Amino acid sequence: MRTRADHRYTQCRYCVFNKTRESFLALNVVRADTHLARLKGLLGTVRLNSGQGVWVTPSQGVHTIGMRFAIDLVYLNEKHEIVDLIESFGTFRIGPLRMRCASVLQLPTRTIYYSQTQIGDELLICSPEEIEQYLQQNAVEENEMSGPLESAG
Image (cartoon, rainbow, N blue to C red):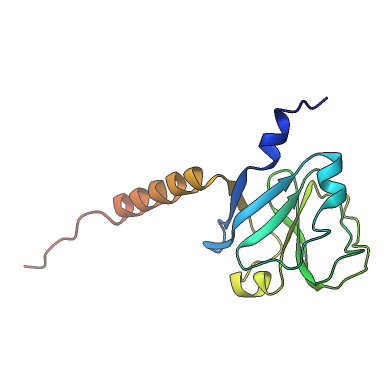
């Protein structure tokens, strides 16, 4: 059972980075991980700005009943690999259920298109501090792999 202190965790902000395509999907995602938060979802929201989103977990599908705008849907398995994508999912609809799905990202329309995200891609969903560490570590590893430049002489 969740306590009042657990509510704080729901309000944490997450970044979503596509490790496969090396592109960001969102920098300001809220996790909906309680029954009430999943039920509310984006209801009452006027619109999603670029970089915003909701991560509904656990979930095998979502709906847009009562919403005022279309969204992109990214269905993820427990390893944060994409099992399905729906671009510009319209209002007042019930999304398909995906049995292999563990969570669903609700993002502004055109996010999937602009990030070139595809089924099978692996996402990193974490705090801004964790994404900064990940990117710094990858930059160091790339520098080590390229090695020192040898002068032709």
